[in-house]
Length: 339
Image (tube, rainbow, N blue to C red; front, side):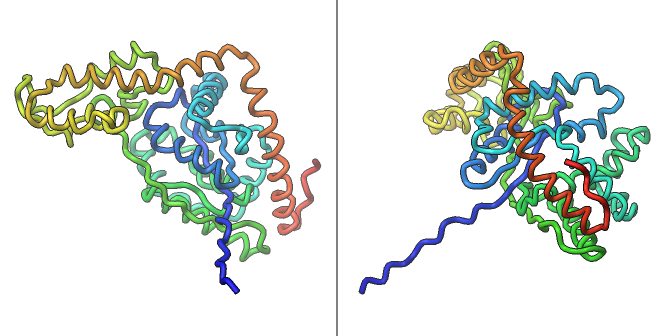
């Protein structure tokens, strides 16, 4: 008899992630997160949200633009390949079970746990004491509610975010110790989040004004590429360059892979000047991103886009969230929230 080894089907995890609607997304978001989301929606039970409640934790004084930003972020999700037919795509505030669970968890989380967060301390120093609101302090509790309400067993994070997820795990363990097991204790799915450089060589960030947006037209991208920082030692054509420290070369590795050996050799020898190197990037980046820009313009013509895309996802998310919240309320001896 032939001994045929049975192959196990890969484990299908439930994952959750999201972004705050603080404006249009940039290329750093694409390579740092969205590309991974597109892969996860094919292999996992994926829940992706637009975290508009989280946007209020630092943007409460100027919240009038959140509605428009929800639309902008949704457009960027869609053109990046996030497919509402392959994942659950929802708006955080439209799942009222999220703030309700956050409130219940806040009753059991010691204040000291929140105050010791490095992120909390760093942002207080950076943004000032006026940001030290109850909601900002409780940001990790709201984040915990996001994750455990959907019983996500894995959360995609970079190595620098593992400590944040550990607080979620502590809150789950405390709840289970006080009451009874309800939630899944999530694990970090360590994901390589590349630090994509902006036009000035620093990490790409909207706050630095150095971003190339997913929605930028070809002309806008070309104008930004012209300003990109290159090797400071390569001043004139003929000067040998160091592509490994050049922002332009970083993007050539993404958009000009077929030409990369020639570009690297030309840079090192000095045969390729920085102006011509940038022109080559303008061409390859423009060709690669034009379909995404065109698709975005077409989608933007639909005034009902947000409602059409999110209605199904919001409903599915609420079904899952309602069940988990009910289990938590039962465990705590609280009356269940009416459906």
